[in-house]
Image (cartoon, rainbow, N blue to C red; front, side, top):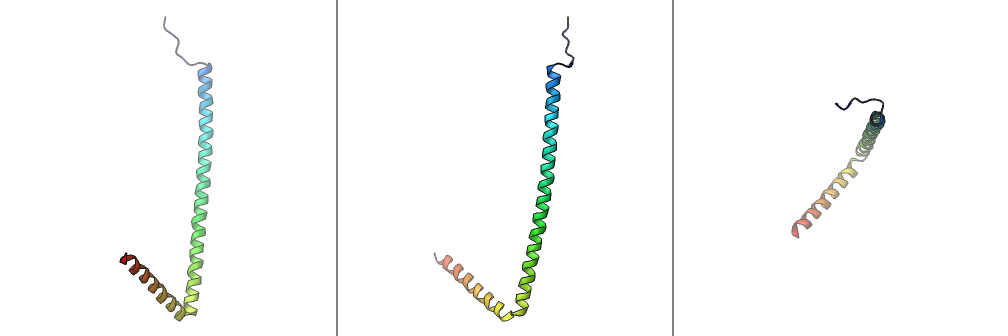
Length: 91
């Protein structure tokens, strides 16, 4: 006689249904976590863009109000970078 291999409402079917429910719950939590991460990343990028725009505006205002001071700062920064480069090349 052949053995009956059909799945009834036995323990295997119950375990399969429990596993399917667990996987469905995990999928829902993963999907929600992905949505939250996407939202957070989008807000972070927008916030960074706002900060960069704010810094650009402040720099533009300072540059237009005190052009000679900005030129002096640029000359000093260039001199310091050149001295650092020259010092590093000597070693």
